[in-house]
Image 1 (tube, rainbow, N blue to C red):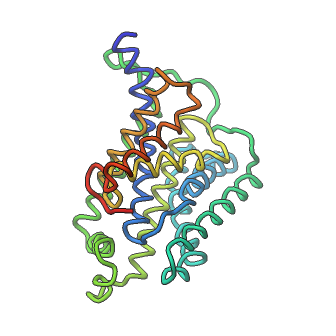
Image 2 (image 1 turned 45 degrees about the vertical axis):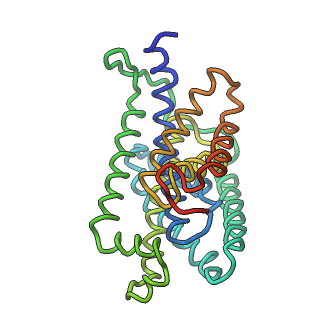
Length: 290
């Protein structure tokens, strides 16, 4: 196999998949960093965001990329509503109760998707898309826009967390929730803002996975382990760590088919997760310890 074949068939798809995992892993790391629990409904929230885009495409004939911001806003509202309905009253209790509650929320969201849209695979747009060639490297338009949109979302989030008042409040809650509360930070509003961002990123991750592959009711569930592996690999609580971990997991999964059957892609993510927890539980960029 020559270098261009490796880049076109393994590296480029791995980078695109890594970008999708990165968005999901950022949401997971925000939940754990700010709210202190592992959110098992994260993948199914992404699935809901992806299928909301499909609803807008099917019912209103919207372009999927135009429908994406609407879905992101709706998923953000849904994430905030799920917090107030199912998680808020458990904040003062053991974190394991919230984790179990999030599993129930995941099953509920998945059931809604299956009842409304069915269990068959679907796509946003039919037909075959031919890639463009850039110096021999073949990239489809949807892959290019996936990477560009992911970069814009990550940079925008980093600027928000670094320079805005509410971004600093989220970082303060992540470092020390009790001290942040004593300092006058409105923790309820900060929590709602955190869930808003989580919903936006989840919808984007689900949409990008759907437009680059296909829509399935279980797509978010299959994404969950790689996204958790990416968050832990990079360092829980670190946005840049989630991006790094997502890229490593995505590229590793796509390259694994060179020496493993494709059915074992998720097993590779699981192996990386276990190795990282055993060797360096703080992740590559020294995040929080689980």
